[in-house]
Length: 266
Image 1 (cartoon, rainbow, N blue to C red):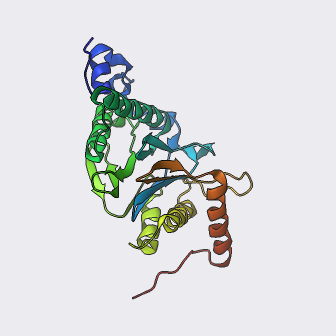
Image 2: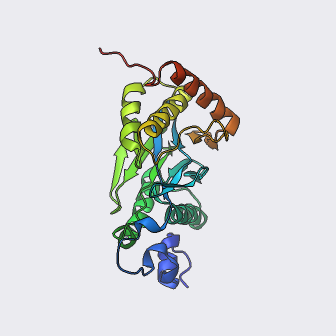
Image 3: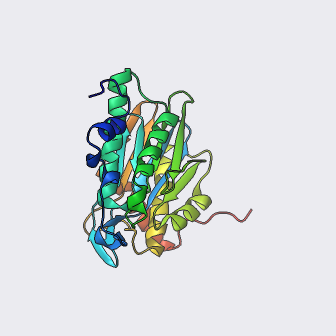
């Protein structure tokens, strides 16, 4: 045993490496079709915080595997992580990341910086590279409130663990192209928390409109996106009633204008 190792993943890697997801041995070949996939996650910053939202659909090929999967999770008090890719592995990685941050805090007596947290997540993704090459990729989106800089920050990743800080907004997953296009038109620097929440739900609606793997607001089952807000006071998940109120207004407006809000030409 090595007491005092600040990284939980490194500790497990030294003591019982077979317990880490990335150390498992898989049969050769593409395994992408063997497990449900999570899809679109969007995030946007506002003055004093950041918002992250995810749709609720998981798919296996052309089959809807689950209608109410959760894809956005608190990483710690001041950060959240959303998952796209192989759902089971992604949820496992999120749990390992949560433990990693909690372990560091207990060993060091303080929390990691935003850069430190984002780098730790990059290391976990890099450890999954072998499985990613067999189609079991996990591509998270990480965001949180930077206590040192007093601002919301967003980080995206590639399957090799490459880390990229995004400005203002970003999206990952199969519907990300449509979500980013929507946010590109709707996002403004002066948006507050409520405006950002409305913008990310509009973006998810647009993603679901053009990407079959992204689920839109399910009005019949009352299943709506999961939305987390992180500010200097910490993170919180919006209640179903809060999200439903925004989603109902978005859907009602789309009844009048299916393409959504119009951005000015100049």
